[in-house]
Length: 481
Image (cartoon, rainbow, N blue to C red; front, side, top):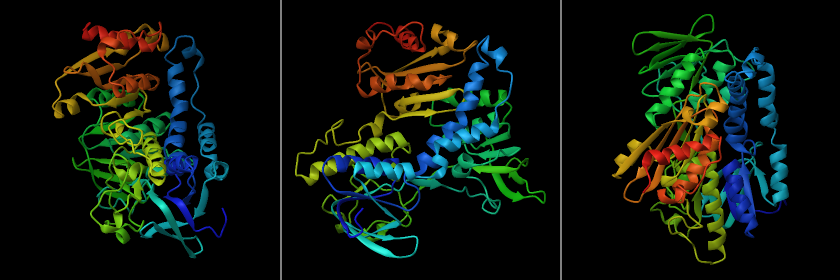
């Protein structure tokens, strides 16, 4: 960038995957754009979340899949090469170097300023560099907050003193501990328990309520069954009430039931908090440290006079809509495009499912939990649909009964569920649990987003013999309209 440039059409605070997508859309639309980033360009997903976590999981999943196929099982007699797994993980994070991402920004015509950004007025951002120097950037049209979220430490006496892992430490570790205690029941807890069990650690997963509680109940049940079969200990209905480091360096967790769990390391995966505590929200009349409420065009909502003029946007985790990279990038595309549209005085398409809105945030969010078995879902669960007051019918089918699944793995275990809105005769939710079901999910997402009538889905013929034949079996369970 030109060091003298301090005014841009758009300023994006946060250079993760979401912020990059906002900037890409605004630059392509003809607006000068700068990203301000205090850490690595590429953000959490590239270095401490999506990419390294899936790299850690993939080797174990591939080996397990081979062991479920006769002929391959007899050949797959060894254990994972842990050092090789970690080297492969490191390659996906570019060894925590953002040179490639910075090069992409340059090629895309996106300016970059390194430092910590804080709102300091209407369309104004003050940046503090690593050396303490400050500079002021102003935006002609929009400022976008895309700073993401960070892990929350649970309210357990002593937990901060034992130097626990969060998702960052778990995905970037350079060694596998002999034993690992995992506190939490969400996606991160389930995935890291799966990964470290496959890497040879003695894993104890401590779940306060139910595992993957936002999914259909059978999803968590099947993952727990698989974790236990792989050698992990899973404690449900349990919660630590005290944490301490013993003289030998191990962590001792005292449970509410009176028992204890001892491990070399402890990973806390109990929730996320927005990274807005030091972004200068108070300067424009918003409380520091809060999630940001946005409308469907991603404009920040609030009563402060400083927010008038359609200039402050937020995308990604900070909106608290769906803390998923792909959903944040979806929001980013909508926000980037509507910023361009408003800048040039064009008509905004903000009706549901319009060009400039993130409608899918409300009813069609897809998610894959890369455990073994995988959990892939989109839309509403049975419980969520009932809570919404829909008149529904639930269709269940064992995926292992599909020919393509039986070819994929001997004794394939899995389950599919579709939730049908009977009044409209469309799908409002689909869940798959099983090996390799993640690749089934986009078809379900299209059906839910497109509100494809059940009668028309009968004409979507699945190829034989593939796992997609489960769609035909679900339709047969429903019956011809």
